[in-house]
Length: 233
Image 1 (cartoon, rainbow, N blue to C red):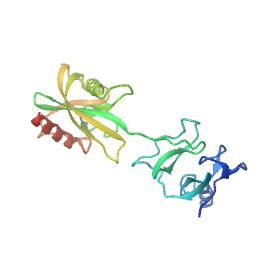
Image 2: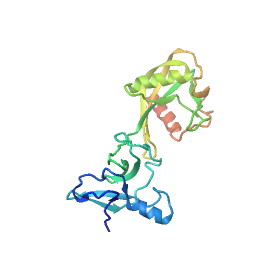
Image 3: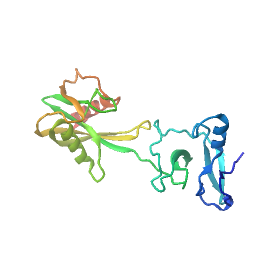
Image 4: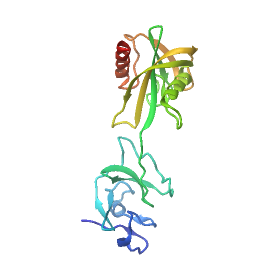
């Protein structure tokens, strides 16, 4: 059964052309939560629908988590209202509970480099989460206004102290379970000295048959892909 939204002010809801009125609404989920003795957000969510310019609300099973993680934005960038997860275009998205603004969250873009020195693979022991204390490639996020290639060179220099020349693209790695798209290059050291940066506990040069515990599931795939790329180049 469709349930209309309720707010503390008598608004002509039938004339509204958006899913939320200006005053804070008491949603049916709030009423259910209060009766059940639960805090807001634990009761079933409701999806605002607009049909013939009439705002209607239908029960949905929208999760409070998006892509395996919690709500990525808590407050609306338009009006500073509280954000909650609702179904928009059949996908759970953060929506402002005050003005109805929909926040379309994009993935973060990261880079990594596979660098060999004297026939050994250069890896760093991570000093930050995730996977703190485990080993992986020099890597990091691409800054706004920075090219992917420059970010790969910068991150390698910041974490290892060396300047590299990018040789080839290994691949682009993504998953519906993660909010990061990873672009990986092979690189050759052309300057600097191998020195651990602030975000790594240590650096190591490893033979491929004596690798340490790697931080991420795709790390071995990246190594294999980089060797395949090298063999065909």
